[in-house]
Image (tube, rainbow, N blue to C red):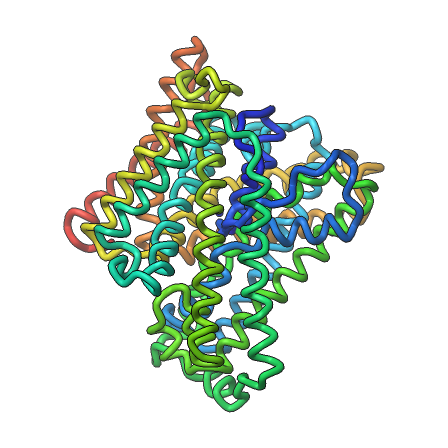
Amino acid sequence: MSASASHQSVSHQSASTTQASASAASLSTSGGDLATDSNAGDSPGIAQPHGGLGIFRLVTTVITLIIGGGVFTLAGDQAAGGASGAAILTAWSISGIGVLCLVMTFFALSRVKPNLRGGIYSYASTGFGDFLGFNSAWGYWISALLCTVSFSALLFGALAYFFPIFGGGTNLASVIGASCLIWFYVFLVSRGVKEVTGVNAIITISKIVPIFVAIIVIIFLQKFDFGIFMANLTTGAEPGLPFFDQVSSTMMITIWVFVGIEGAVAISGRAKHSKDVGKATIIAFVCVLTIYLLVSVLSMGVMPLSQLAELENPALAGVMEVAVGQWGAILINCGVVLSLVGAMLGYTVLSSESPYEAAEQGVFIKAFAKTNKKGAPIVTLVVTNIIIEAFLIAMLFSDSSYQFFYTLSAGMILLPYLLSAAYFAKLTFTEPGLFKGKIGGSIVLWRIFGIFGVVYSFFLAWASGSVGLTLMSLLYAPGILMYIKGKKERGEQYLKSTVDKVVVVVILVAAAVSLFLLVSGQVVI
């Protein structure tokens, strides 16, 4: 889903531009953190002149797009899953390969199918029909709005360090605060705000500086204890948990921080030289993976996993407090607050733009394509925030936390990722001639990227667990009604193919079973 995508542009734009900016936005926030901040994902500095980015600026821009709020919670989230240090490093190895395959998939698709300007929706629709394409767009939208919910919990959890009234970020005070913030952002966007460059600049600094300070301080002030790290390699927070289960418990965390990775390729058109795009994408990916690994590994050298698991989010603040004292925690919490305030603005844009563009392309109902006098997609803004508000209220009556919502957000974006990777893999076998002259490398290599991208997406779906799969099926089911209504409005046929009918049956059966499991108490949220 992690982005975790870029919220640089608030006004509605062409499908391709919006998809790009939306993806970027979600990346940086990502828990992905959309582009400026995953998921995750706030995309600062994306508004560059076309063709004006050299390889260095391409690399730094992509890094900014990907890194978001998720990096601040990595240490605690991984430990809370009950994994040992060895399992955590194994999960990073698997995700490193898997995400690289997805990155190269999106990069290659942007080169061999430049006419598909609807991004993730277009890939799924072209490859497997408009119903699966619709579900890809639906999953992308729901993933984006769930990012806002998870960010609100993390934001007010960080604010609780300064104002204890916010508790863990999910109490009544936090929900009221989050509600005021998201509706204020709706007001801003509805007024036709077109540039958030200043906000993005602040966000970029606020999220990057604390991370590098933490890394540098732990290394150069010799706060890393090799003995603690070696003990963590073999001892997890939950002794006795099978190694494979330890790895799978960490997988959704590793994809969350990369949610929005597809948005990085969206800036390819801004490169001075097209050949630099592939290089920049890989270099940026390696840099981001290195940052995540450093935060993860260094944290395991400061505190035992059992203690890391007990830290309140943002866990990196707790790590810094142990390493250097209170100033470290203050620095990290301030960075998280500033970063997420901007990220939530970015996701307000993304989660309203994506359904608006889908409606413009005839995928969602016509009402979603309506704009106000300022050109803002007012219907999707209001509907999206009503849904977000419902999730915020639901937080009060459950044990759901930041981790729960980002896992669900990352899970919802897996179908779009899976269908994109599957479409790409299909192209490498059915239309290998497309690659000649458009992209370098052997067709065999691109087939490997496509196949591994599909396998990785399936593995992540399995790793999301019974609760994740249960809720995902319930969230996809309402989309069927939206799809049918949209088709009827346009006088078009729907569910024409056997595949479409099978997919509908699978979704409805899965939703019915999931509802039964929830009602009977066999699955607890």
